[in-house]
Image (tube, rainbow, N blue to C red; front, side, top):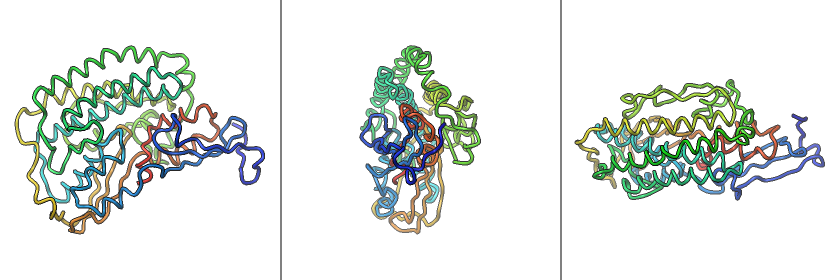
Length: 377
């Protein structure tokens, strides 16, 4: 690494560029302002604000139930975690019990979402290096899962399926068989994806030893999910603080110790197989009968009891939390969303990029799987 040049004191020796927001290597609408000495990054600043803004304040102006179509937009590839966190907060404040079968269906939805996101992220890591075949395969596999979501919820992306007290409806007849058919279809193609990506000499050259996340940074920055687990962390809320029915499922936390982009790709690839195992366990153990929702009061006049609560789940990118305060009125008093993207895409990314080659910028950033709306909330 060369000496870091301060553009304010030595502007003639630097190149000043904006990377994004209209760039295929940017995860969502965000921009990175960078300064270079030759082709080496000397300074980086993350900018957001190009897509969604003020989610938290919008939620504080709406009826409690009206926020479910809104929270989905905070992370478009994985909307269900926001529905889950928000519903859990309302349930804890209002003392609502969730029926047993609804817990199983919720867990199924959350794992299907994780499965779809990791398929896209694993293929996308290759796509940013020019290996677009893997990227297209990942998107195609994800579309198979979105077909299942469309059948279950009526929508491919914004499901608005999880609600306080349960879910909107039971599984359609024969749905379990169609889920298994999709799993088998993807499972048959995964060895080809592995050969194309993980056994690819160029992919290894561009990812091994690149984008290092030092283990001591995990606590310093509050890193979570595959970013932390690829550097040896064993933290996973599904094990550490089980919610819904995760305590009734058998699985081990996936970890790697390579600390680099390749290790993060390996974590996501192994979690693809883990999600398939969990989905099969859920379908096998789920009760066949029983209610899927608790009856709610008149939603236009519903006053959630006063109090405050923090709920959290393990998203595909790590711990995802909601801090919700009610003053007993028709609308929330305060809502704060804690998504992994804030620490991953601002302090961590800005630190990782210093000293990196310009060709590795999108490679490093994509390995963090950022959802910009979590930052500009």
